[in-house]
Length: 302
Image (cartoon, rainbow, N blue to C red):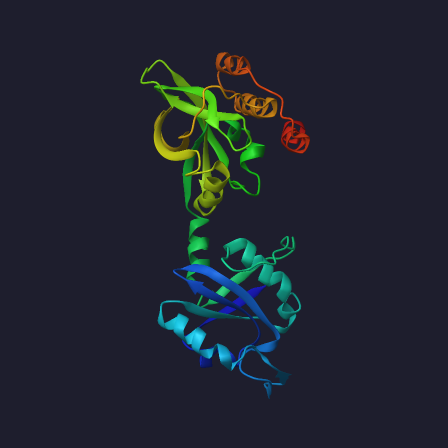
């Protein structure tokens, strides 16, 4: 399916478009996606171009739309052919899920058979996303994210690909990062002692997924991003990782969290001595049975 995009400079430019997808964009990001399905974008009820219908935004919205456009917003109309219009609901939802939004509330799972291409005056937000899909960053995972199945979850970094293993000098692994669930999570604690090492996995991740990974990791809410030098078999690699900012030495990890961390270390063949050392950490039972089961399921995927 192909969406033919047109940028509208005014309400009048947009109002006679019918059976279309539209996007209100602000600062290069999607603000609101919508559709004029069997209706016009704007104006009152009328007959035009074989359609007898009202506008999605009647004339009362003219001043609001014009004011937004004057202050930097952009308005795009996505034109569809007759066949594509039968999937307009699926297309709208695909755009919301794929490119993000601020104001949309009704969001559903994306139809698996939907492939969408773009042409014409493609919105900045779509262009930026398409560019980021081809740009990646290196991420050093040293805790539960070492397990590929965990890191590549849809709400984290589905594109992540392991490119190597290594260690960071002058740091020591601890499980004392304070978590909202009351347990301890991993930290690469700085000791200043070069003989201390935190081993982990280097992943290549699409830049378009960085925000989702930061949210999943709690950036700014217990973790801070740092650039670290990872020593690998081929040299030193500078990568991004997350370091704990809220710690409590009395905390212990849940059994499932420790098990996922160990499983990731085993998956990527970290040094056997290090893996065995990870097994020695004390852990505790998670009394939330649902959370425990959901996370333990990661350990038993064939």
